[in-house]
Length: 274
Image (cartoon, helix red, strand yellow):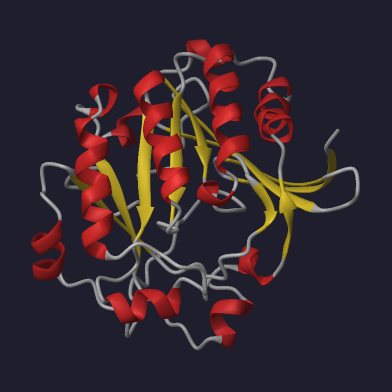
């Protein structure tokens, strides 16, 4: 059973530091936003007017870890400083149940959007069997939930096929790829030592994903944390990806000691005000 070590509250939610029975760290988040933020197309900022951050009855998002630590080693990510172990399917599901049970005044089914994001600690494609089992169990419990997976695109053909099969069986899976730059050489440098798919291979994955019946209406998100010296070149992006298939999300660099040690400087100066 997971234990709470500490937590930090902020304007629109809580971040929890949990730990496994043997004391390994896990990060789990409980956040919410106004429903109007669900459509981000054309938005030039993440600033919300006034102090209206919405509630869990609007957009309720639970972020879970699939590992304790991470072996990928992205240069700007504190999680990648250590890797302890994969989490079991039960431990992944338990994080969601912990957040839901911690908010008895809200019913996930009553939220205008209820979203489970596998975006905290760990790389899902390196824990694919436990990840898929957890998604299936969470779908059985919360069939209305959007499930969002984010990957750096680890070269693991078995995991990709498992993911494609899962998406063909379960609706409402949102696929996100951590890109951060369009330069192949710099992407390898920035996103750690694990072998990753090339841009051409990632584009093939996107096209295959979009052909899956459950995913035809949902674009793949390409995430870019913009860092000086690691460019996002629109012409290269357009060379590989069809705008009808992808949504581009730009984020500021989360400043931490690991980003500082690697002399990384963010391009977007405006930080999340929440």
